[in-house]
Image 1 (cartoon, rainbow, N blue to C red):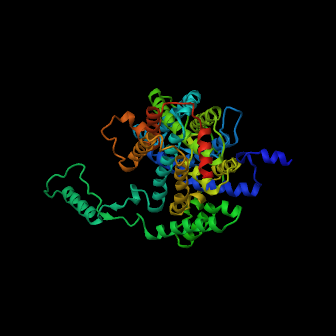
Image 2: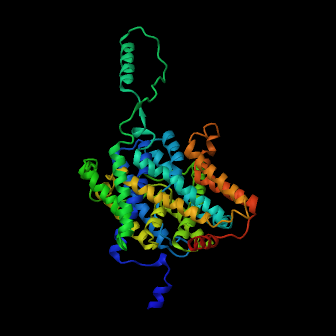
Image 3: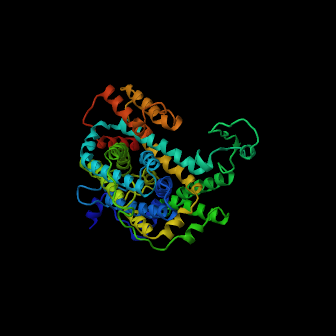
Length: 498
């Protein structure tokens, strides 16, 4: 019996049920804000009634859980990479879906979106084996660079959780209310017949007044409390307590915000206890060839990003990623997207937030994410419980985000630490230029405004730009060998040894 235990790999270890449940909840809390964001955005863009938007959220949670189960537990040798992966809606698909929603709002627009998603899921299933053949283009210098860019890119999410999104209600500046009142008075005078010069049709004021909703000190303080709590628990906690440091920090933040009146439960009270998730809720999908091609391009971007996530997880868990494993993982992106279209939700990918959590906790068992998938399925059927999780202010997640996303970046640095930069100085060019490409969408998000709209989806991802640059530069300077993620794992182990 002891021999069997010794041969069990960390990713295949089955933890006691209570621990699996608690660790699964931790993964769900980390990815929940991102999971419900896209249904909210698309539902409102489609101008759907509130009850339909609420249905989109429940359907999304259900599909998140179902696809997570396929990816982490595995279904035959063809589906599921069998690593601790949580699946969620990719934000890369938001742009094309918003364009469809604006051109055709309402139920018809929803049917068009879901038709394009089903078509893209089928295309992804077909091309997954081809994409998996790119594994040899990812030696440690490329993999380390991509994982570093993933971590740095994610930092934007964590920082926005703390301070607020730079656009919308929490933008740093707002229009001066006095200016708004003056403009309204002028418009009223014009309507009453007073002779005034005709105003330009799109006359509007620029935001010049500091927005109290952006970076309030109370929110920053709560994020700091969560961060300090996580660090103290990780430092002084023992065993399982240290493993759930992130969850305990989030719980502490949630209790604090509830006591301060910052956490509201109105939606919880109004939500139903149970709601079924039916396929084709809005009717039979509309299959438009152009929309399908557009969404398929998005899925190619998603699959390349997923390759980087799987490589990061392979390094964190000590599991060598083979080409069949990668193909199974990418194929699940496709089947998950197909399931999403059928169940009235959106394209799916591995959530990078949870990759960081694996690094923070050190828990490598994939069955933790199996538990998280089951929890998401239950939340999909129980809107009241889902609303309770949604009530958690994002500032609580902000402190945890710095830890988790920084861990992803640190993993990339650890791989790069064992890359030969002395004998192969050209590797410096690979890292430096690729990192710069990855930062473009973060630093200059409007850089693409004069470029053809058709390429925006391809160049809007810093991870994709960095991946493309790293692969091309490495091939230019070092050639293309038979590199695999096994080299990455060996590099990481050597780095640990030193």
